[in-house]
Image (cartoon, rainbow, N blue to C red; front, side):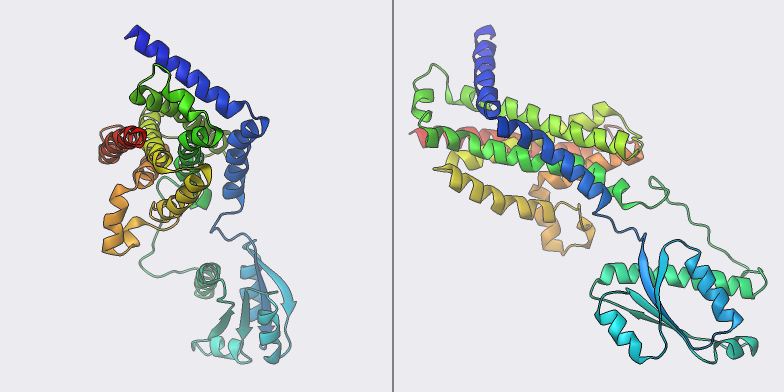
Length: 369
């Protein structure tokens, strides 16, 4: 056993030297994770913080002025133009200057004073449907507040008080960054493991590796361990950014989180080594990897919930380790659940790992024959 561990350690050292000997590799393994964490944390958000709008106020009364004051007071809506006629609406929407146009009719105040319903027209630039829909909901909330003010503060007999668990302010980054702990590391892990054997073949060192006293299984283990370490390091980088830069509090245990991340990284490395074993050169390995990464991310539940997918795609996600890793990371990070609660994520990751690594070893041995 001691001799076996010594051989594995020498293979791990050799693999780490091959990865880190190029200065560009050292930068690539750390900097993209940092940059992508900041980009996703700041840019990839569905939260509305700046909605430019144009106003066509044909009433020009105190009621319309009060309504617009409610809107401007939110800090979200920013008036960029006062329109004079309806013909101005198309121009400001087509140019993209305004996301929404609010039109208040000439009889707005008279209708309110008469106790009638006074419509407010909302014209949306639906080329960005998600943002436009969210903006419409915000405007509806402002109008509800305005209606309550008109009733003298006496609201309806039943009121709704909403409390958001695990993400009190409903910030997108609270949901996104815990998922990125798994997904960002998977890209690099898959790429490194897919290129490992293919790089040996292309550099002409594969035959030299075959004449060493190492068995094929030992070679695969020696190639897997350094990449697993790199994958966990990249997950740690994203975790630290989420914790200390974006100040997203972690409710769960690091032991539970890293138990899941460890199984997930092993499964990812097994997939990558399987790709590498069947690839004749690095170009093939990169092509196969890129073909695999996009479906894995799309079917992971990171961007859209798995439950909203068609039934046959929900079934297809069962072989995707990223689906279970994202669910585990988000639940441990935000909810603070323990190992027993996420066992339904750990078992599939364990099964996938138990399949992919032996498959990679089998493919590697058969390529030698």
